[in-house]
Amino acid sequence: MSNDIADRTTPTDQAALLDILRAQAGTTEHDERPTPDTLAALRALGTLALRTPRAHGGAEADATTVARRLTEVGRACPTSSWVAGTCLTAKNIAAYSFPQATVAEVFADPDALFCGSGFPGGHGERVPGGVRVTGSWPSVSGCEDAVWATLGVLVDGVLTFVVVPLDDLTVERTWHMAGMRGTGSHTVVAQDLFVRDDHTAGKAPFGPADRLLYAIAVLAPVVGAAQGALDATTEMFASGRKPYMSAYTRMGDSPEARHWLAEAANLVHRAETTMLAVAARADAAAAPAGPDPLDGPDGHHQRLALADAARDCRAALELVLDLNGTSGFRTSNRLQRLWRDVAVGSRHPLLNPYLATENLGGSLVPPPAP
Image 1 (tube, rainbow, N blue to C red):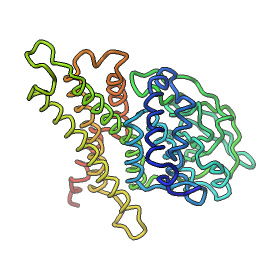
Image 2: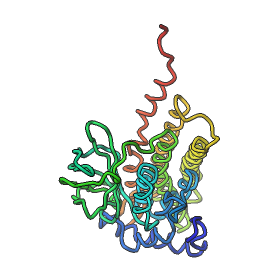
Image 3: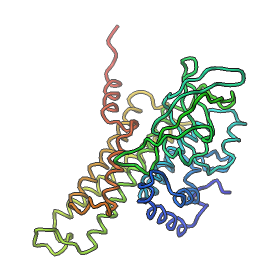
Image 4: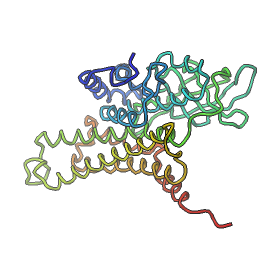
Protein backbone atom coordinates (compact mmCIF):
# COMPACT_ATOMS: atom_id res chain seq x y z
CA MET A 1 0.00 0.00 0.00
CA SER A 2 1.33 3.44 -0.89
CA ASN A 3 1.96 5.85 1.93
CA ASP A 4 0.87 8.67 -0.39
CA ILE A 5 -2.90 9.11 -0.20
CA ALA A 6 -2.95 10.68 -3.66
CA ASP A 7 -1.48 7.48 -5.17
CA ARG A 8 -4.40 5.33 -4.07
CA THR A 9 -6.91 6.44 -6.68
CA THR A 10 -6.99 8.16 -10.05
CA PRO A 11 -8.72 11.54 -10.36
CA THR A 12 -11.62 9.76 -12.06
CA ASP A 13 -11.90 7.30 -9.18
CA GLN A 14 -11.72 10.12 -6.64
CA ALA A 15 -14.55 11.99 -8.38
CA ALA A 16 -16.69 8.84 -8.37
CA LEU A 17 -16.02 8.25 -4.66
CA LEU A 18 -16.89 11.85 -3.82
CA ASP A 19 -20.12 11.41 -5.80
CA ILE A 20 -20.93 8.46 -3.53
CA LEU A 21 -20.43 10.63 -0.45
CA ARG A 22 -22.63 13.34 -1.97
CA ALA A 23 -25.37 10.85 -2.85
CA GLN A 24 -25.29 9.26 0.62
CA ALA A 25 -25.29 12.55 2.57
CA GLY A 26 -29.05 12.67 3.10
CA THR A 27 -29.21 9.07 4.33
CA THR A 28 -26.21 9.64 6.56
CA GLU A 29 -28.05 12.53 8.20
CA HIS A 30 -31.28 10.53 8.55
CA ASP A 31 -29.50 7.56 10.13
CA GLU A 32 -27.35 9.80 12.38
CA ARG A 33 -24.27 7.82 11.35
CA PRO A 34 -22.25 7.26 8.17
CA THR A 35 -23.73 4.68 5.80
CA PRO A 36 -21.72 1.57 4.87
CA ASP A 37 -21.20 3.01 1.37
CA THR A 38 -19.95 6.26 2.90
CA LEU A 39 -17.43 4.47 5.10
CA ALA A 40 -16.25 2.36 2.16
CA ALA A 41 -15.71 5.51 0.08
CA LEU A 42 -13.79 7.21 2.90
CA ARG A 43 -11.52 4.18 3.17
CA ALA A 44 -10.98 4.01 -0.59
CA LEU A 45 -10.09 7.71 -0.68
CA GLY A 46 -7.49 7.15 2.04
CA THR A 47 -9.18 9.76 4.23
CA LEU A 48 -9.23 7.52 7.31
CA ALA A 49 -5.46 6.97 7.04
CA LEU A 50 -4.47 10.64 6.91
CA ARG A 51 -2.75 10.50 10.32
CA THR A 52 -1.93 6.81 10.40
CA PRO A 53 1.88 6.61 10.76
CA ARG A 54 3.79 5.90 7.56
CA ALA A 55 5.42 2.93 9.26
CA HIS A 56 1.97 1.38 9.55
CA GLY A 57 0.70 2.05 6.03
CA GLY A 58 -0.72 5.55 6.38
CA ALA A 59 0.03 9.02 5.09
CA GLU A 60 1.04 10.73 8.35
CA ALA A 61 -0.16 13.83 6.51
CA ASP A 62 0.79 17.35 7.51
CA ALA A 63 -1.75 20.03 8.45
CA THR A 64 -1.85 21.50 4.95
CA THR A 65 -2.69 18.14 3.39
CA VAL A 66 -5.29 17.49 6.08
CA ALA A 67 -6.92 20.87 5.41
CA ARG A 68 -7.09 20.31 1.66
CA ARG A 69 -8.34 16.72 1.82
CA LEU A 70 -11.00 17.29 4.46
CA THR A 71 -12.26 20.37 2.63
CA GLU A 72 -12.56 18.34 -0.56
CA VAL A 73 -14.53 15.63 1.23
CA GLY A 74 -16.60 18.21 3.11
CA ARG A 75 -17.70 19.77 -0.16
CA ALA A 76 -19.42 16.47 -0.93
CA CYS A 77 -20.53 15.52 2.61
CA PRO A 78 -19.55 17.65 5.61
CA THR A 79 -20.49 15.03 8.18
CA SER A 80 -18.30 12.39 6.52
CA SER A 81 -15.43 14.85 6.52
CA TRP A 82 -16.07 15.60 10.20
CA VAL A 83 -15.90 11.91 11.12
CA ALA A 84 -12.63 11.62 9.19
CA GLY A 85 -11.30 14.71 10.98
CA THR A 86 -12.05 13.45 14.46
CA CYS A 87 -10.62 10.08 13.42
CA LEU A 88 -7.29 11.69 12.56
CA THR A 89 -7.25 13.55 15.88
CA ALA A 90 -7.76 10.27 17.76
CA LYS A 91 -5.10 8.60 15.61
CA ASN A 92 -2.62 11.39 16.27
CA ILE A 93 -3.05 10.86 20.00
CA ALA A 94 -2.73 7.09 19.63
CA ALA A 95 0.38 7.33 17.43
CA TYR A 96 2.37 9.61 19.73
CA SER A 97 1.24 8.59 23.22
CA PHE A 98 1.47 4.83 23.59
CA PRO A 99 4.27 2.22 23.47
CA GLN A 100 5.35 1.06 20.02
CA ALA A 101 3.86 -2.41 20.52
CA THR A 102 0.48 -0.83 21.26
CA VAL A 103 0.83 1.49 18.26
CA ALA A 104 1.48 -1.53 16.02
CA GLU A 105 -1.56 -3.28 17.49
CA VAL A 106 -4.05 -0.46 17.00
CA PHE A 107 -2.76 0.44 13.52
CA ALA A 108 -2.80 -3.12 12.18
CA ASP A 109 -5.50 -1.84 9.81
CA PRO A 110 -4.27 1.59 8.67
CA ASP A 111 -7.75 2.54 7.46
CA ALA A 112 -9.60 1.59 10.64
CA LEU A 113 -11.96 4.26 11.94
CA PHE A 114 -10.93 5.74 15.29
CA CYS A 115 -12.96 8.00 17.55
CA GLY A 116 -12.22 9.71 20.82
CA SER A 117 -12.56 12.49 23.34
CA GLY A 118 -10.00 14.53 25.23
CA PHE A 119 -12.65 15.37 27.80
CA PRO A 120 -11.83 13.54 31.06
CA GLY A 121 -15.24 11.91 31.25
CA GLY A 122 -14.03 8.91 33.21
CA HIS A 123 -12.04 8.09 36.30
CA GLY A 124 -9.56 5.28 36.68
CA GLU A 125 -8.38 3.20 39.61
CA ARG A 126 -4.92 1.67 39.49
CA VAL A 127 -4.94 -2.11 39.80
CA PRO A 128 -2.23 -4.71 39.14
CA GLY A 129 -1.40 -4.62 35.45
CA GLY A 130 -3.50 -1.64 34.50
CA VAL A 131 -6.40 0.66 35.32
CA ARG A 132 -10.10 0.06 35.90
CA VAL A 133 -12.09 2.77 34.13
CA THR A 134 -15.66 3.94 34.60
CA GLY A 135 -17.18 6.96 32.90
CA SER A 136 -19.04 8.43 29.95
CA TRP A 137 -17.89 10.66 27.10
CA PRO A 138 -20.44 12.67 25.10
CA SER A 139 -20.16 13.86 21.51
CA VAL A 140 -17.84 11.11 20.25
CA SER A 141 -18.13 11.31 16.46
CA GLY A 142 -18.27 8.07 14.50
CA CYS A 143 -18.44 5.94 17.64
CA GLU A 144 -20.97 3.42 16.29
CA ASP A 145 -18.63 2.43 13.47
CA ALA A 146 -15.19 2.97 15.01
CA VAL A 147 -12.83 0.16 15.97
CA TRP A 148 -10.72 2.02 18.57
CA ALA A 149 -11.34 4.96 20.91
CA THR A 150 -8.81 7.22 22.62
CA LEU A 151 -10.38 8.67 25.76
CA GLY A 152 -9.37 11.07 28.50
CA VAL A 153 -9.50 9.62 32.03
CA LEU A 154 -8.55 11.07 35.41
CA VAL A 155 -6.26 8.66 37.26
CA ASP A 156 -5.16 9.89 40.68
CA GLY A 157 -6.22 13.36 39.59
CA VAL A 158 -3.96 13.31 36.51
CA LEU A 159 -5.28 13.43 32.94
CA THR A 160 -4.44 10.10 31.34
CA PHE A 161 -5.33 8.72 27.93
CA VAL A 162 -6.47 5.19 27.25
CA VAL A 163 -6.95 3.44 23.92
CA VAL A 164 -9.68 0.79 24.01
CA PRO A 165 -11.67 -1.30 21.53
CA LEU A 166 -15.18 -0.04 20.87
CA ASP A 167 -16.41 -3.56 21.58
CA ASP A 168 -15.56 -2.90 25.25
CA LEU A 169 -17.74 0.23 25.37
CA THR A 170 -21.46 0.91 25.24
CA VAL A 171 -22.89 3.53 22.89
CA GLU A 172 -25.85 5.62 24.01
CA ARG A 173 -27.58 7.37 21.08
CA THR A 174 -27.71 10.90 22.45
CA TRP A 175 -26.74 12.95 19.36
CA HIS A 176 -30.02 14.58 18.28
CA MET A 177 -28.92 17.88 16.80
CA ALA A 178 -30.05 20.47 14.26
CA GLY A 179 -26.88 19.98 12.20
CA MET A 180 -23.95 17.59 11.75
CA ARG A 181 -26.40 14.79 12.52
CA GLY A 182 -24.62 12.31 10.32
CA THR A 183 -21.49 12.43 12.48
CA GLY A 184 -23.21 10.10 14.96
CA SER A 185 -21.52 11.93 17.83
CA HIS A 186 -23.18 9.85 20.51
CA THR A 187 -22.07 9.07 24.07
CA VAL A 188 -19.72 6.18 24.85
CA VAL A 189 -19.79 4.54 28.27
CA ALA A 190 -17.28 2.39 30.16
CA GLN A 191 -18.28 0.46 33.26
CA ASP A 192 -15.49 -0.98 35.41
CA LEU A 193 -13.44 -1.60 32.26
CA PHE A 194 -9.96 -3.05 32.74
CA VAL A 195 -7.36 -1.30 30.57
CA ARG A 196 -3.85 -2.74 30.40
CA ASP A 197 -0.90 -0.57 31.37
CA ASP A 198 0.39 -0.54 27.80
CA HIS A 199 -2.94 0.93 26.67
CA THR A 200 -2.61 3.92 29.00
CA ALA A 201 -0.52 7.06 28.55
CA GLY A 202 0.30 9.88 30.94
CA LYS A 203 0.77 12.44 28.21
CA ALA A 204 -0.54 13.14 24.73
CA PRO A 205 0.37 15.41 21.79
CA PHE A 206 -1.24 18.71 22.74
CA GLY A 207 1.50 21.14 21.76
CA PRO A 208 0.62 24.39 19.97
CA ALA A 209 1.03 22.88 16.48
CA ASP A 210 -1.07 19.85 17.46
CA ARG A 211 -3.85 22.07 18.78
CA LEU A 212 -3.93 23.94 15.48
CA LEU A 213 -4.11 20.62 13.60
CA TYR A 214 -7.08 19.55 15.71
CA ALA A 215 -8.85 22.86 15.06
CA ILE A 216 -8.20 22.56 11.32
CA ALA A 217 -9.68 19.05 11.42
CA VAL A 218 -13.05 20.51 12.49
CA LEU A 219 -12.84 23.70 10.41
CA ALA A 220 -12.08 22.03 7.06
CA PRO A 221 -15.44 20.18 6.93
CA VAL A 222 -17.16 23.53 7.56
CA VAL A 223 -15.21 25.21 4.75
CA GLY A 224 -16.09 22.29 2.49
CA ALA A 225 -19.76 22.62 3.41
CA ALA A 226 -19.68 26.32 2.50
CA GLN A 227 -18.13 25.41 -0.86
CA GLY A 228 -20.89 22.87 -1.37
CA ALA A 229 -23.47 25.57 -0.66
CA LEU A 230 -21.85 27.77 -3.31
CA ASP A 231 -22.05 24.83 -5.73
CA ALA A 232 -25.77 24.49 -5.06
CA THR A 233 -26.27 28.21 -5.58
CA THR A 234 -24.36 28.42 -8.86
CA GLU A 235 -26.47 25.47 -10.05
CA MET A 236 -29.55 27.51 -9.18
CA PHE A 237 -28.21 30.45 -11.22
CA ALA A 238 -27.60 28.12 -14.17
CA SER A 239 -31.11 26.67 -13.97
CA GLY A 240 -32.72 29.74 -15.50
CA ARG A 241 -34.68 30.55 -12.37
CA LYS A 242 -35.81 34.18 -12.11
CA PRO A 243 -36.02 36.34 -8.99
CA TYR A 244 -39.61 36.39 -7.77
CA MET A 245 -41.49 39.69 -7.85
CA SER A 246 -39.01 41.27 -10.27
CA ALA A 247 -38.75 42.08 -13.96
CA TYR A 248 -35.60 39.98 -14.38
CA THR A 249 -35.92 36.87 -16.51
CA ARG A 250 -33.06 35.07 -14.76
CA MET A 251 -31.05 35.42 -11.55
CA GLY A 252 -27.85 36.31 -13.38
CA ASP A 253 -29.47 39.41 -14.89
CA SER A 254 -29.70 41.04 -11.46
CA PRO A 255 -26.56 43.07 -10.60
CA GLU A 256 -27.26 42.73 -6.88
CA ALA A 257 -27.76 38.97 -7.16
CA ARG A 258 -24.34 38.76 -8.81
CA HIS A 259 -22.98 41.03 -6.07
CA TRP A 260 -24.42 38.75 -3.35
CA LEU A 261 -22.93 35.70 -5.06
CA ALA A 262 -19.54 37.38 -5.32
CA GLU A 263 -19.66 38.37 -1.64
CA ALA A 264 -20.46 34.80 -0.61
CA ALA A 265 -17.73 33.37 -2.85
CA ASN A 266 -15.21 35.84 -1.45
CA LEU A 267 -16.08 34.92 2.14
CA VAL A 268 -15.63 31.21 1.43
CA HIS A 269 -12.38 31.83 -0.45
CA ARG A 270 -11.11 33.94 2.44
CA ALA A 271 -12.01 31.21 4.93
CA GLU A 272 -10.10 28.59 2.94
CA THR A 273 -7.12 30.88 2.37
CA THR A 274 -6.96 31.71 6.07
CA MET A 275 -7.17 28.04 7.05
CA LEU A 276 -4.38 27.08 4.66
CA ALA A 277 -2.17 29.90 5.94
CA VAL A 278 -2.63 28.68 9.52
CA ALA A 279 -1.97 25.10 8.38
CA ALA A 280 1.30 26.21 6.79
CA ARG A 281 2.25 27.95 10.04
CA ALA A 282 1.45 24.80 12.02
CA ASP A 283 3.54 22.69 9.64
CA ALA A 284 6.46 25.08 9.98
CA ALA A 285 6.23 24.93 13.77
CA ALA A 286 6.04 21.13 13.73
CA ALA A 287 9.13 20.74 11.54
CA PRO A 288 12.30 19.65 13.41
CA ALA A 289 14.13 22.83 12.40
CA GLY A 290 11.04 25.02 12.50
CA PRO A 291 10.51 28.30 14.32
CA ASP A 292 9.81 28.61 18.01
CA PRO A 293 6.63 26.89 19.23
CA LEU A 294 3.38 28.76 18.78
CA ASP A 295 3.28 30.08 22.32
CA GLY A 296 2.18 33.60 23.16
CA PRO A 297 0.47 36.04 20.80
CA ASP A 298 1.42 34.23 17.58
CA GLY A 299 -0.44 31.07 18.53
CA HIS A 300 -3.45 33.07 19.72
CA HIS A 301 -3.48 35.00 16.43
CA GLN A 302 -3.60 31.69 14.55
CA ARG A 303 -6.45 30.31 16.65
CA LEU A 304 -8.47 33.51 16.26
CA ALA A 305 -7.87 33.38 12.51
CA LEU A 306 -9.45 29.90 12.40
CA ALA A 307 -12.44 31.11 14.44
CA ASP A 308 -12.85 34.04 12.04
CA ALA A 309 -12.75 31.65 9.08
CA ALA A 310 -15.61 29.69 10.63
CA ARG A 311 -17.61 32.89 11.01
CA ASP A 312 -16.91 33.76 7.36
CA CYS A 313 -18.49 30.44 6.38
CA ARG A 314 -21.59 31.23 8.42
CA ALA A 315 -21.87 34.67 6.82
CA ALA A 316 -21.54 33.16 3.34
CA LEU A 317 -24.37 30.72 4.02
CA GLU A 318 -26.68 33.58 4.98
CA LEU A 319 -25.96 35.30 1.65
CA VAL A 320 -26.60 32.22 -0.48
CA LEU A 321 -29.82 31.54 1.42
CA ASP A 322 -30.94 35.10 0.65
CA LEU A 323 -30.32 34.32 -3.01
CA ASN A 324 -32.20 31.02 -2.87
CA GLY A 325 -35.10 32.38 -0.85
CA THR A 326 -37.51 30.08 0.95
CA SER A 327 -36.87 27.28 -1.56
CA GLY A 328 -33.46 26.89 0.05
CA PHE A 329 -35.20 25.63 3.17
CA ARG A 330 -37.10 22.81 1.49
CA THR A 331 -36.15 19.55 3.15
CA SER A 332 -35.40 18.18 -0.32
CA ASN A 333 -32.87 20.98 -0.93
CA ARG A 334 -29.36 20.07 0.20
CA LEU A 335 -28.69 23.74 0.90
CA GLN A 336 -30.68 23.71 4.14
CA ARG A 337 -28.70 20.69 5.36
CA LEU A 338 -25.42 22.40 4.55
CA TRP A 339 -26.62 25.53 6.36
CA ARG A 340 -27.39 23.50 9.48
CA ASP A 341 -24.10 21.63 9.28
CA VAL A 342 -22.16 24.90 9.05
CA ALA A 343 -24.18 26.44 11.89
CA VAL A 344 -23.37 23.55 14.24
CA GLY A 345 -19.88 22.60 13.08
CA SER A 346 -18.56 26.17 13.16
CA ARG A 347 -19.42 26.38 16.85
CA HIS A 348 -17.07 23.62 17.99
CA PRO A 349 -15.11 24.69 21.10
CA LEU A 350 -11.86 24.73 19.10
CA LEU A 351 -13.40 27.49 16.94
CA ASN A 352 -14.79 29.57 19.81
CA PRO A 353 -14.36 33.21 18.70
CA TYR A 354 -14.90 35.04 21.98
CA LEU A 355 -12.45 32.88 23.92
CA ALA A 356 -9.90 33.15 21.10
CA THR A 357 -10.27 36.94 21.23
CA GLU A 358 -10.02 36.93 25.02
CA ASN A 359 -6.88 34.80 24.98
CA LEU A 360 -5.23 36.95 22.33
CA GLY A 361 -6.02 40.10 24.28
CA GLY A 362 -4.61 38.59 27.45
CA SER A 363 -1.39 37.64 25.69
CA LEU A 364 -0.91 41.17 24.35
CA VAL A 365 -1.15 42.94 27.69
CA PRO A 366 2.25 43.06 29.43
CA PRO A 367 2.39 41.90 33.05
CA PRO A 368 2.37 44.62 35.72
CA ALA A 369 5.72 46.05 36.65
CA PRO A 370 7.20 44.49 39.80
